[in-house]
Length: 163
Image 1 (cartoon, one colour):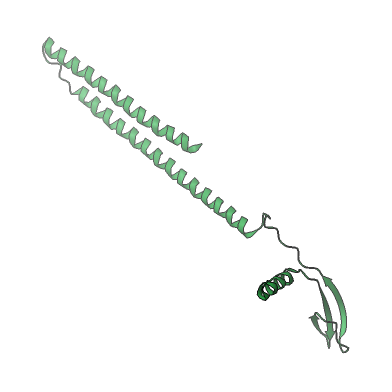
Image 2 (cartoon, rainbow, N blue to C red; image 1 turned 135 degrees about the vertical axis):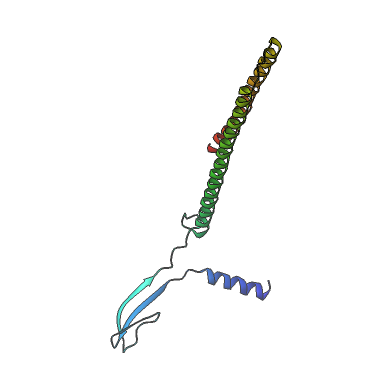
């Protein structure tokens, strides 16, 4: 083995040694000082204490910075997704209101065209007028059916997003 590898190995072993220390609390002329060596003759030793190395923090601790950051990121992402879903639901509800209003306007226009039918003076004109009236009624039913189906699809999307 090369000298460099041996030296590196020894340094690694020594640096990983937890070590224990004694701390001396000394007082001289009313001033307190702390030292790793015993108090001098002119100083009064107040206390000495054996200190053990601090326990190593577990990386699996729920208070580790990495876990806290991950938790914050998840909460942030969840919050953002919730806001996005709420925005999507709001937009779908707005589309439903617009569909209902469009249906109402279209039905009003068809109703108005019913009132403009001229039944005429003879049977043929009356037959044509009734035929036109039936067509308008069919158009009104088709309009209601079409808008109802479109609104139902939008409501299903809302229900899906709410789950």
